Length: 315
Ligand SMILES: O=C(O)CCc1cccc(O)c1O
Ligand SMILES: [Fe+2]
Image (cartoon, rainbow, N blue to C red):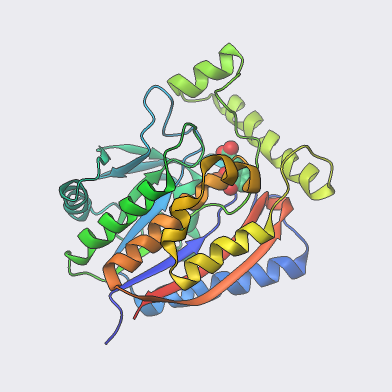
């Protein structure tokens, strides 16, 4: 019997193509991504449930949900990623939302979500665009503290997986983000009033403001690769421990991981691994057992990313 559920994990970085590592590293990444593309083509998903974080382009402190499912979504086109409407499957989105709520998870639903490179990049890399495949976007807060226990993200993923199994479709659970990385994302706590106001209100930046912010991240990547920076280093041991647990299906292990320790080990944006935990919890719930069929990892300072690509399918 062919599997009816699968998962792909794909780290993202807005610096891909802007600040690339050495050619041999790039070649290894390309090979891993090609493998994931082939995996996805062979699986031929009828629906993609995409778990991804946001970087203060769609979600702000005026109200910051721990997670949110979209019935419609628009990408802002930050860092040169594709802008415009995602090909959201509204019926599947509504069915999944109801199924998750029925299972006792207090899901926020957005009828018009704003998303950034976190959502756009994996769709562009794997499918050639943000409008090529029916998708249900699920925002998972991986940046804006305070954050709740990881167990709740696993519970979200499980509920989505159970609800997805009832759709009677081949579903790919796609995770975007992580792993360990500490990019210069602004922090509300202690921010000067102008920055705090931007993080709370979320007024769209002017093109000049956006360009300036993006240039700051590109420069941070150059400094990071050159070794001259105060950012927390990429942590391959921690990243591989996470991948080990995902590979072995030891998802309950993450329940004892604390927000504080994750930030210390993996940097301020390490919480993006919540997307990976959700996606694999969904696959486990939809298919009982799963097998990780490929696993790639490399620390890539130029991209400010503990960069991983994995594929997994239900047995
Ligand atoms: O602030 C932003 O919009 C981008 C931050 C950022 C930088 C490098 C790698 C990432 O994964 C990331 O999210
Ligand atoms: Fe990110």
